[in-house]
Length: 351
Ligand code: NAD
Ligand code: DAU
Image (cartoon, rainbow, N blue to C red):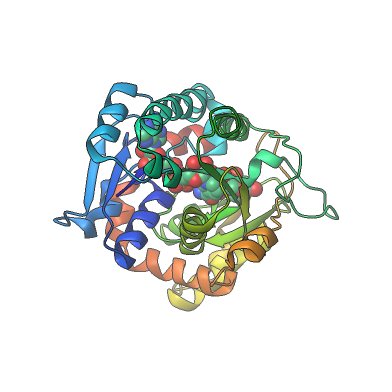
C-alpha cells in the first residue's frame, strides 16, 4: 500500500480519489484536518476498506512511526502543508511548523522505517515530496519559464517554507541515500478547491452576489494546471521517476489574474445567467498582496521527455469542468463557507 499525507486537502483528496478509482492498491491517508482538511472531500469513499483514514499530525513522530511499522507502505506521498500565501503573510509560524519542522520529522520517521526494510523493499521504496513552483521566485515578462535548474529564490513565508522542505528532502537523498522524488508544480484548480484561493473564491463569491477581489491591477501571471493532470503526473513520477530527481509540472497555461476572472465570469454568464447584467460587474480591484510575485511559468519538458507526461486538459476545458462542478456541488461549498472561513475573509478582505 501507499501512505499519503494531507489527503483530505484539495490536491491530496483528488489524488486519493483518482488513485482508488484506477487501481486496487490501498491508501493510508494521514491528515491533521486543519481548516483546509475536509473529510467531505472523501465522502464517496465511505465504506471502502482500501481507504484507511488516520487523523494525525505529520510532526507526531510516534504516531507516524507506528503507522509505518503497522502498514509497511511501499511509498509515501507527502502533500500535507500549510498552502495559502496570504495566510503565510498574516501568520508564518504555522508554515514553519508544518512545512519545515513537520517535513523534517516525517523524513526522520521515514528514514528509520526505510533503514529497517529488507534489501529489496529498501530499493523499491519511494518518498515523493509534492512541492511548488513558488520556490523559484518571480519571473519578468520576457524571462524563460522555471526549469529544474532554476535557482531557488522564494519570496513569501509560504514559498520559503516549501523551499526549506525541498532542501531537506534533497539532503536526505544525498546524505542517507533515501530514494526521494520531488515535484514542483504550478497553480492547480479543479473540484474540492478551498475557496480562499483565487478560482474557487471567485466562483463562490460570484454566485453569492459578492465582490470579486482582484489584488492590485490583476496583471500578475500564473500557469494553471487542472488538478487531475497534476495527480497523473505524480503517479507517473512515482512509478518511473529517477530517484533523487526533481520534476517540474505545469500546464503551459499562462494567464493574467484579470483574464482568469473574466473567463470565470463569462462561463457563469453562460451556465447560470444573472437576472440582469454580467458577473463581471462584481469585479473590484483591492489592495495588492505584499511582495506579490509577478509571474510564474513552468517548463515541464523534462517530465514529458523522460516520463511521457502531458496535461490532458486545456485551461478552457478544465475551467469549464471546474465551474460546472461548483454549480453542481452547493452543499459542499455551503459546508465549507462557515466557521473559521468567515474569520479569514474578515481578516483578509475587510481590514
Ligand atoms: P490544502 O491546503 O488544500 O491541503 C493541505 C492538507 O494538509 C489539508 O488536508 C490539511 O489538513 C493537511 N495538513 C496541514 N498540516 C498538516 C499536518 N501538520 N499534518 C497532517 N496534515 C496536515 O493544500 P493543497 O492545495 O492541496 O496542496 C497540497 C500540496 O501541494 C502542498 O504541499 C502544496 O504546497 C503543494 N502544491 C499546491 C499547489 C496548488 O496550486 N494548490 C500547487 C503546487 C504545489
Ligand atoms: O504556484 C503554485 C502555488 O499556487 C501553490 O504552491 C499554492 O499552494 C497555491 O495557493 C497557489 O498560490 P497563489 O498565491 O498563486 O494562488 P492564489 O489562488 O492565492 O492566488 C492566485 C493569484 O490571484 C495571485 O496572483 C494572487 C491573486 N489573487 C488571489 C486571491 C485569493 C487575487 O487577485 N485576489 C484574491 O482574492
